[in-house]
Image (tube, rainbow, N blue to C red; front, side, top):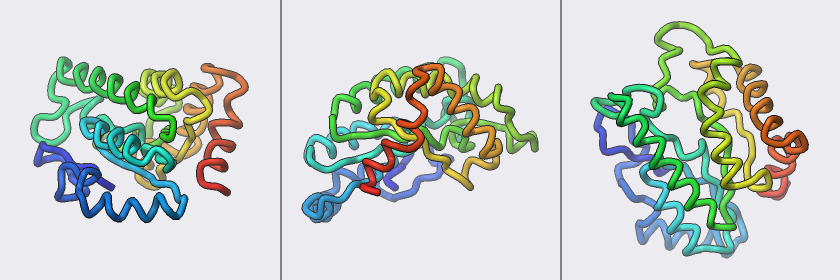
Length: 205
């Protein structure tokens, strides 16, 4: 978990802003590559370039970006100032779109449709003590999932529940139903691919 944010009010999971560029980390990653193992990368959206650089340095190693790169503050303010205004939120989304499209150019990278309802994205369902309905989930997730599927296609996108972290916002059933509806709308034949085949192939199950 290399997610680090410059807003001190947003939780950072490492003390290092660019862990995936650290020489010691890269030395360790060489052993991972030699063993022909895969790697789960998690960063916040402003760090996606670090994943791109990692993927380009180790083009033979399968890498999956968890939680679609977690655009912090996309749906509302978190931390001290992140996502405070509509203009800031539009900028977060635009920059995320550009970064995701660039990452998709790396053929060894997959992406997980997951983690879209962690509070760090700016959701307030947990503060209102309510669980989001399927329709509410679809409304918020559609622009993100559609962009991911357009960039990565259905062959390099996989569903992941991110439970229990997302349960503060909705139920697992609602999330599965919402995401599957969005994927089905993108392509009716993509459900088995996104919800089963891709994960099986990526993790060599």
